[in-house]
Image (cartoon, rainbow, N blue to C red; front, side, top):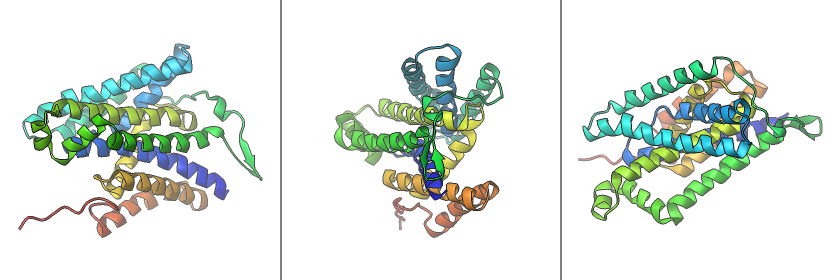
Length: 289
């Protein structure tokens, strides 16, 4: 049972971390966040389901089209729900991104229906047995892909020219602008990348959780909690917090009860914030005197 809970915890935790990285990317680039990030998880799963199951496309084609659409969705959110308010120095982007998420969920309900549907996967047909415990290959694929993507995001930021430009925008937007970096485009790319990561998480989780228009709300909320625990400015902190949160959630559900899972998880958020308001590996804000 412990092995099964460990695999489940790593799978969920890596997805929480992947979605939470989206909050981190937009925050460090523009000091704004997309609060419809959880709905991007749902959109990825629903989009892949529509292409693969409803329309009968080959899975790679359905996946590619769904992820391209997700990147466009992220860019659109930045263009219509963030930039107009950001330019006016208004915090209304917060409510605007929430509104976009609610609209996306209701559009999905109108077109997809309210009921959850199983996402067929060959990796969910035959469990791998370890002693008397079995788990599906999909449960192993999720953390492997999730951790690999987290690593690729870090390589993108630290090893590529455009990634370094995004870091420059995050470090000092005014200086980055003077160096010729297109700040509005950098912010839009950050939002597109953020939604893309959430969409991949949705596709990976779809065979495990089933596909439903409501599936993104709680995932987005938990990913935001992970981002806060790890520290909004720290990608490594968020990755560690995501894995830790998933493991705690899995073991509490397995050894205590599923009802206690949310109590312990969000109680942990409060405890960490009391001890370190800036997150586990986040930077303590400097105080002006």
